[in-house]
Length: 194
Image (tube, rainbow, N blue to C red; front, side, top):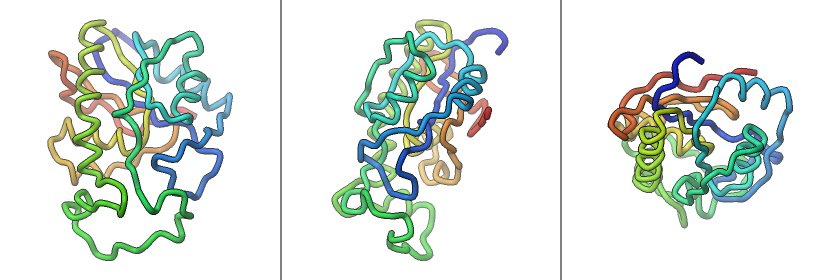
């Protein structure tokens, strides 16, 4: 992967064992494909440290990618809390209708949180991971959720609603450049190696 440099290597967890459901904070298992994990391990390259959401699907993905690593769990990296709608089949979710990106980012699910809330919660964790990359002078992996990776993109671009426009596939890699301990640039988004 060329010369090592401080960056965040953001990896969305493997597909879940129970697809078609709004999982959010539900602690569901990942469906791991050895071929996909091997391809991602090669594509992600060497990392100095691994930071992971406490979600089972993220911990399983991190363990499959770096079996010898001792990941640091960070509860601020949990997926968005969809409250009363967690565990519902995607086809049974309410239609929000015509909604602006600003309104969508601010929409708080009953009993849950908004995407803007996720950004506020995850930003300090992402800053801490960027500080680790600076300190190691090498990439740091963050294995988390689509919402958290979009929050990282919001942090770098300075635009919370705009970050919702990014697609983040399972087992994809998004790379953010780090300068002086902060994520400052988008190097790639949603790269899938398998």
